[in-house]
Image (spheres, rainbow, N blue to C red):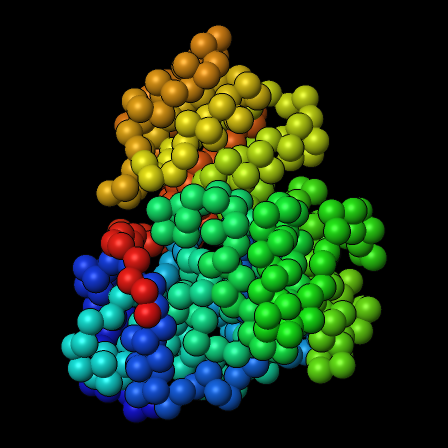
Length: 428
């Protein structure tokens, strides 16, 4: 594609930020239109398309690591980002350079000619253009929200993957697991194998029915397979073993198309890195900080299990902040009984729940524990700097800010704001 008029990285970020005024829309027409104007770069690429409520980012990271170790040039498309917007577009785990993001943004802006488009739709096509330009052998392609009407669903993958399905984004995806599963199962394509670790019976029934309608080979991953991995996985937690089992099932299923040696599998599992999900950071003063982006009840339950098993017997201070549109009361109920002390903070988002709201929920749930509302994350970190073990959770936005504050990346306010979205679904 041509490069358009020159644009700096800062100008590109500002342009992308302005697209946020269009909110979030669900439908494929706009994405298909811009992709066609860009020359349909998706037609030159192979994809593994990944959907699900929890675990899809980790599963993507595991798949990427294995195939990269196997010698492929692998594109990785995920969202949201933690620190830099460039995290969303990676090739062999290298973030897209600022100059290339600016150049491609300018080119797509000119091709779009001011037509209404959302940030995610635009970014989806930008990613396709970048991966095609980079001549990726394989793209690990994560859905944004849902699947059926998600912008990423304009591609035809070589495999579809669905991780665990639970309650999240009910206002957009539906208020039952069957409705949510219907949206996730929308990534299933005719004749394309579908791999899933979904356990909920309602969700499994929907996936099975959709796969049958599409004549798509359906491969299940049983919960017990998490305990039978051929090699250890670098990510912490039993749930990550299940994510690894799902990824390995897809790798095995694609062997005739993309051969991978056992040694590549071993090294890929050993080297996988996925920040912000049960990530441990050791401070110079001996304090250990655990970051986890648990932002729904299922994620909080997984975090609780990890705290009880992987960090058993270790007292900790909980720093918690959540977006107001999440079911944070349920998360409070799950995590409060484990914490020795709780510090609540606002998330750097216009959608944040207040520290006082969250604090009141923690007090109601666990009146015996000390709860303190803090002005912001830095206030909470200063108040807990002498603690031995700190857990920061409740939102990926908060985890991203923590990585920035702890010196593990530089975050600009404009880039953090690119995680914002709002609006009502639009069918199409």
